[in-house]
Each structure stands twice: as structure tokens, then as C-alpha cells.
Image (cartoon, rainbow, N blue to C red; front, side, top):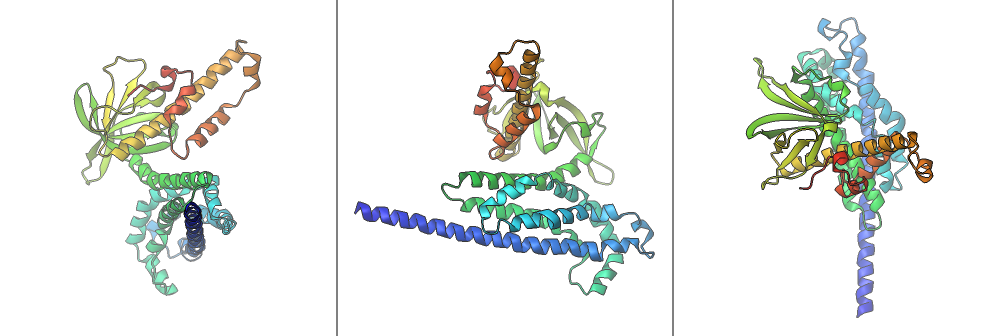
Length: 384
């Protein structure tokens, strides 16, 4: 009886793995087929629509607007046509290698956030003019330019869906591949959000801080901020090096703008990941201030609170590593370090890279803080 059960168990596992392999192959085929169509669509815009702007009969207010209408479409086409399509094709027989392709090109996917940021300007210009409509009729195309310009936005959403499907089909013994695909999905999700975040950042007003010097904008959300028993609704922006608080106001035209209230360098703050009973609050405190100078941020939803605390934790962790490395180098310089310690001298860049890869799949893990000499001051963490 036991042998029969074991055989059935093995057969079931085999059938599941065969079924998963087939599904992975089907997802891979869909990814490749749609990638080819996507590259063709981008090429079609560059061939038929971009050259129109060099014609003598271009309406005056469209002259010199190539960048506003088409954004970085040429760079997107170049990246997909020359690099990404071929790399995806090389994964045809091994779908689980696809995560690596995305991670290798994580910087190129930043093109999508910039494209999305430019999209509202592009839409406004295209919709104001019949100039492009005439070309569509001449081409006898059922799709207008606006539909073609939506392709990159649709494409990055499609990547997100297909990668998530792939994660679901990874079986036991495929943990490293699952982690890579999960990390790739996270890269894509970030870019999906980041375009909107950059647009919102453009609406910040009366800000005396140079935001271009604060590292990457990681996320922005609305919070109730409680400080010294006062509660106010704020739009909060998290950069690599800065947390910035703004207040939303409507302009006379009805547009939303965000008026600067205050900001703090992330290297000066600490984090308490959870406070209060709701499960929606976390606390930001300062190392060189009084205990009552803490800010409690209350999120609208649990997932927003979790995303913020994980990202803040990641930033503090990277800073702690950086600080420890700087102190170690100081000790070496002063001749304090032992010979064994001096033999191992990774660069600051290498330490940063290691921190980032270590965090990719789950973004943030407090247990990894424990190796940092247990220095609460350095790590910026407080017990919950």
C-alpha cells in the first residue's frame, strides 16, 4: 500500500511539473510573439509618423515638438530591437532564464517611466490636431496615432502580468529562478508606478531643495501626519536621500499642486515600523532631537504602510553599511585594524551592490541588520 501511495505521489508530482513546464512554455511563446509585434509597432511609428514633423506643411504649433509628441520612443525602439528581443529569443527553450534578461536591463526599463511622464503632454498635442489623422487615412489604418503611442504603456503592463504568471508556475527546486523572475516583476512594477510619481513630483511648488540631488524618487503617497498631537493630510515623497512633506492645493484652473511644507535627510532619521493599534501607522524619529519630535504617518491601507516601511528599511540598511565601511576605512587609515581585516577591502560600490541584490526579492529584512555591530544609532531602527 505504501509503495502504491508513493508511486501515485511521484506520478502526481511529475504531472504537475509537466503541466507547469507546458504553461511556462506557453507564457514564453506569448511573450515572444507580443514582443515581435511590439517592436514592429514602434518601428511603424518611426517610419510613418515621426518624419511628418519635418514636412513644410506642419502646423506652426507642432514645429519643434517632436520630443513632446514622441517622447523617448526612438530609444525604446532601439533598446527592444537591438538588444531585448534577441535576448528573449535566446530564452525560448529555457523560460526560467527570462528573469535574468529583465534584471540585466533594469536601467533601460527606466525609459518607460520617462515615457509615461511625458504622455499627458503628448496626448494633448496629438488630440488638438487633425494633421496626424490625415496620415492615418492615407495609410488606411484602423488605428490612430494615439493608439500607437499607447503601446509602450500597454507593453510594460503586459510584462508585469506575464512575469507574475511565470512566478506562479515555478515549482520546487526552482527557487533561484523564482526569485529572479519575482525581482524582475518588481523592477517592472516600480517603473509602472514611477512614471506617475515623476508627474506628481513635477507639481511640487515653493520647494527650496534641489530635488535632482536627492537620489531616486522611490515612491509618493498620501498620509495623515501626526506631529505634537496635530493631525494633517500630507502628500509625502520618499527619495533615496530625502523625505519631503507637501500639502495639496487646487489652482484656479483646477489642477492639483503640492506646496512644500518641510523635508528631512534620510540619514538623519530612524524608523519604528509599527505603532498604534490600527496596523496602518509607522513612526519617523530623529537621532539628534527630543523624543517628542517624532512624526507618525498613517497610511490609507496596510499595503501602502508595508511598502513604505520596507523601502525606508532598505535605505537605512544601505546607509548603515556605508557608515560601517567608512568607519572601517578610518580605522585602517589610523592603523587600528588587524591585518586580517585589512586584507578584505571591498569598495563602497561593491558593498552597495551586495546590499541591493540581497534585498531584491523581498526588499528589506530586519534580521540582516543584526550583523551591523548592533548599533541602533547607525542602523536607525527601534524595537516595535
